[in-house]
Amino acid sequence: MTLKRRCSLSGWLPGIAIMMAALVVVAAMATGTVQGRADNFTDIFYTNSFRGAFEWIKKLDWVGMIVQAVISIFSLFGVALLTIRIMTSMLFLSAKGMWEEVHDLKSGGETLEKDFLGMGGMVKSWASGKAGTGLDAIVGAVLLLLPDVKRYSDFGEKAGGDFGEDITITQYILKIALPTVMTVFFFAMGFNGTLFQALAVTVDTMGTFADKAISVNYAGMAEDLINAGTGYKFAFSADGTNLGKFQQNLAKDVYGRCVSKTRGASAAQLETIGKNIEGRIAEKITLQNLATAQHPTEKVKAGLILEDGTADHYVSYLGYELIINSSETANGELTHWAMNDLVGLGDESSMAATAQSTPQFIHLFIRQTSDFNGAYINVDG
Image 1 (tube, one colour):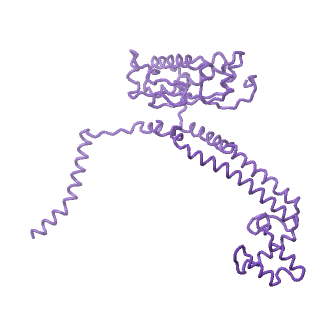
Image 2 (cartoon, rainbow, N blue to C red; image 1 turned 45 degrees about the vertical axis):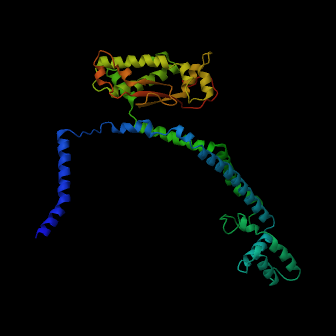
Image 3 (cartoon, rainbow, N blue to C red; image 1 turned 180 degrees about the vertical axis):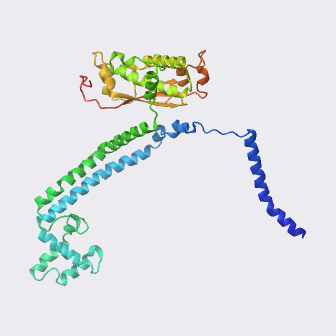
């Protein structure tokens, strides 16, 4: 009886331990010793940890070497094999009856005994009279030595070509002209890099739509505040220049992002934010500074510093991208602003209470949104 009682207690021990552990966790949560917050957890996806960096790609230079070798070699082989296939098909059509006979002789000897280069089987096939008799046998022996041109042309059983029995060489060339031109064109695009650049442009376009889909319309938020009479009114676009329009759109976008980070801001605080943004944009966003941006082409950069009055037109080729994270600097940025500086941290107003506890920075990237077409007259209206 004692042994049975001990076994019964030992079977209960794991269950008792689990219950005790659960009670400890519940008690800890009830007393506040364990705290968890999920507010803005997805902000970590906007940090540099969740985006690629070319610093790592530089360490994989050998991958680029392999890719370049594959593109170069396969482009050459692709065009070479295309040429061989077309020339073989033309050779077949130049003497179609003879090459049909060669193909029949080769196909008939496939079931015979094979040895080195198939010479033994060919001799037996010729000796059995399959290549003809008399003088025809001599011609047949020569035909047996010729390659099976039909098999390797567009008219072979495995070629899959849709050609009629009575097709001529002219009809053949006309039929394959467009596919051949396009094949060579795509191989040339691959060798020159334009094929994958076209794919990259398509992906970037889709990425732009994706960015718009997941982004808040901060400029629209600023417009709503201005229309309600509580927002700050920027006057950059009053001069009618492209630079003024660029500064106006950028100011509204930055203003909306700052306002979204300051909950319950008063009219005076919104005024402070607007003035801070206006001063910093007027200081940093100039033609000379835009010309130092990393991403625009050299033609656009050179146009931005012209002194003949046409420099403002080149601003119409530019766009921007704003990224907010906790990194003080970012590779490729034109400039950055500390969020706490823009919302008024350090002022005597209560704005300091709404400033970010974790410093965040707005990084400005200048992008070229359209190609330079060589025109210097502004026809944008």
